Amino acid sequence: MPEPAAAAAAASEHLLSTHLEALLIWNCAGMLGGALRLPAPLKRLHIIGNSGLTSLECLPGEHPPSLENLVLQRCTALASLPNEPQLYSSVSYLQITHCPAIKKLPRCLQQQLGNIKRKRLDAQHEVMALKPKTWKEIPRLVCEWRKAAREGRERQQSIMQE
Image (tube, rainbow, N blue to C red; front, side, top):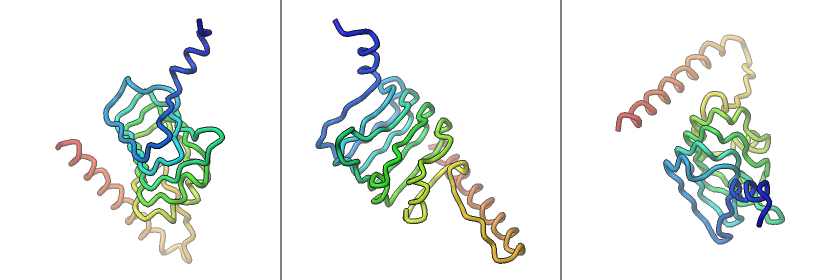
């Protein structure tokens, strides 16, 4: 009979097929809890509406996947993302919204944000260098940020109404 701690650890880790290239998990609030280990061939990962998942991890001993699309929405317990540069080097679409447990993006993902073509992040995750040549630029930048935030809220409200 397995040890209770070992059984609990096994239940909280989810291993995926090593040939999986796309994984879309929608509104599976109680089905996944704990850590999700990502296989190397994975290119698309969309997790929307999951309250049990706490971390994403790369499989030990394997090259990390090279994700092209990463979407995390309404993952209320998800607190940790892998800090693997290769994982984010190919990302062309990134969306991380309504994931309150993610307090800070991994450093390697923060460094890649400028290279990602399409991204949508909650304001808490947005990293912007504020280096205006003159202080006169600040009001314009504030207006742009407020406009972007307002448009994001309006888009979110229209999605929620559908």
